[in-house]
Length: 562
Image 1 (cartoon, rainbow, N blue to C red):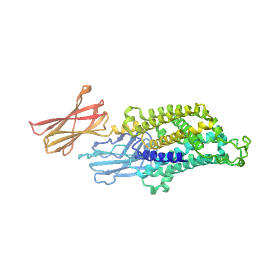
Image 2: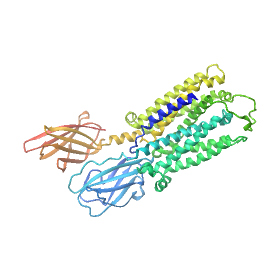
Image 3: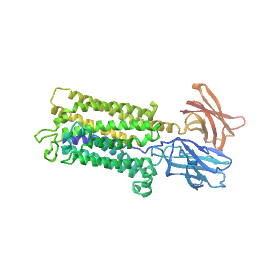
Image 4: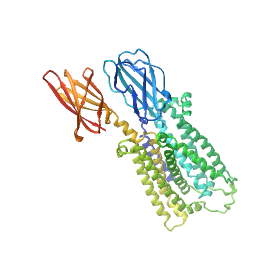
């Protein structure tokens, strides 16, 4: 049992460390446009505000609200999807709105069940535009809810992974069902998988709504979870786990032979795998059927491999507590034998199956990573990419440990000695495998790497430059990606300009100078909408400040545009 204690201690440390990475996820859906556009200056107040996304979003626990400069609500009615278009949300505004600055804030649920929040601003008539609105990305999420939801994900994966190891007692080691430690292991995995699924169901509502743990049993949130894809899949999983529990109870019952158990467990297990694969990032993937298939194969290979390792470790570490008299099984007599001999004889077969699982994991993992990352930058600069790298390192470690185990099996020793010598390596493999599952539990709560990178690069970029000894100019480009952008110039310090003009150039590609037609938006504040920056790079903005008929100063600010 000492090896179990060490493995458990290492597992707790690894999982706790990984769960510290479970920061609230940022946006998965991305705003592709709005009416009015963010930063627009209008002659007349619009009748509605519409925001469009790159994928369908939900409003069940979200909102779209518009307020004036004093914070008063100016929207009327309930936000909805215009003409039934799930990729857009809109809300009507009160008639007769006067000149001023208005802010439209929204919170929606993306296709993969993660909350997305942001805002846009616009001006009616003359007046200052105000500070830039928060772009689509950061959605307020309760920290405790987020951490517990990641923990529930991990429990779900770990539990079903352990239950997946029961394939050994249906094939290579039928006598394993007689061993008390094996029965306890499988039932513990089943109970953990159920607890994880219940936790996911209860926490999905507070996570989407941005509320605290105290709202987990609120009827409105539970009802909403039942009506979204993520909640429905978890509900189906709980039903299937119940059916699987019935099958396992029949298999482990003394005095019974259940000829249909293996087939039933395989069908139910496949259904459980699909409930995992059809949720999360695959919901927004195209084509979705391919994403679900790849995720399902990845999870199934994990269950077969890591679950089998857990069963092998338990068999190698536990004392024999087999009672033949409790089982009416004509395949075995009541003579005194160690049932681990049967398992040891099947180890070469397990080794070949494990190798096949490794190949499946490698191929499907590569497809998943490419689907969610696309670029090396997303791999190294986003939380999602860093977790993928961590999984890759841990996976490489598992492959190395598996190779050493195969070397042990190839040595000319008796079966019992081989299984005993594998014990320490098996414990290490189980701990590393649990760490992989913990990383996966955190990973599915993160936005895909390509989405996170795009959201980060779309944030406004700015640079400050000295105009005089007592004044500075802050140049901001929104969004921070090439194309049609808004350029803002804000003067600070002691300076009284009579006019401000600007040009943009990209010397590396011999582009420009491009005229930036600035319009005064307030004291020391100037903006230009619809400025076309056709390429990424280090753009140079030359700001010329005229202070009199004969005096002017030009300063150059460099802004990195993606």
